[in-house]
Image 1: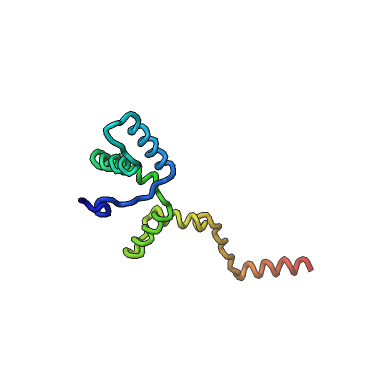
Image 2: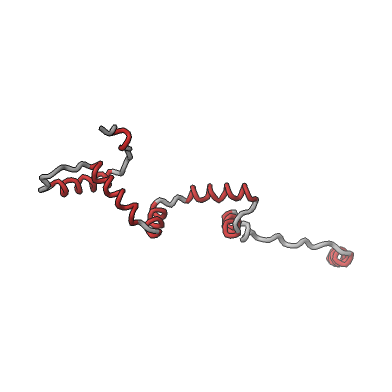
Length: 128
């Protein structure tokens, strides 16, 4: 006899997925007199069949469904620390976030010359 622990692994699914599997079990068992299936049987059967036919399209759909911005940023940071380089797009975004690109530039200083001092003094002397 096969030890059930050797052939069974437990997974957790969402409540929505559990309800869907339960509906499938009801439909399969309805009018099925030669046996019975349970949720574990149905889920195992579906997963086993899926692996045979899934493609890059499904992989992309799964990745899109579980995309996490923080995980991506952490991965980019890890690569940047290892290589010492930050991708140009990210660098531009970081600079934009810090408002460094739109920061007002300083006005150039006007330096005093003898003429400007004398002109200022002459204007002051004329006023007196």
